[in-house]
Length: 285
Image 1: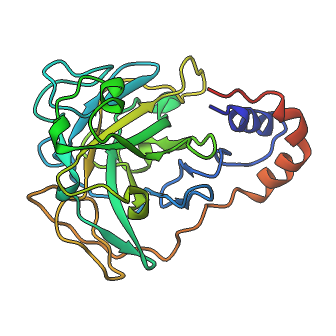
Image 2 (image 1 turned 120 degrees about the horizontal axis):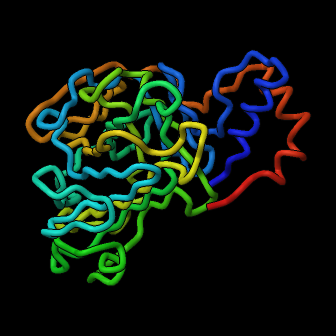
């Protein structure tokens, strides 16, 4: 993934520019931020988060953990792949279980990520990869890994964070909490991406988090991360529901901002001056 934004922040510090984190367009490292990807229209927010979201309340369908960089996939397989944690909080879900939230006239599936990082210099965490598939009911919910999902009956890749352009989501563990027990990121993916998926199809999510080998706090550390979905009744009003479990429901009023968060003016000026030099320092995954 691109590291130019990290270098930009470092250069800004050396030059004495007063700036917050200066990451790419999906930067939600500051509390109260909502950013819309200009690439695919997904919405990423740390506003209106659920205040009590510990395991058993958040009811995740995917839990994963490893230091440095980590990868998880939801499945009913007895021995889940990658860094996925086995147990009741990693399991299959179907598209028929998902509720729909209408925001600005667009229908979305909504997911919540609860991250668990160290405070201080390790508080940041990147989402490097995110892919969501559907497979026919006949393929089952216990596929062993992503390769098995890709080979499953009726397998379709509906959403890929990097499908059109290489994107990174920058998150900050401390903007919503100082410990596990609150959600940290809600992300809204347009339902239009999932055309053709039936209610009985299984949903498989593959996620990679943490920038491997990074020394700027963007790698993964400490405890497990977990993902849950908004299950339940469709919401079509301007008041959107926070991502809820199958047994609980919590509604909050949506903020009016669904556009990418603009960086500080000093950051804009520095970016303009250093764009060419920084381009060479960028590294793709």
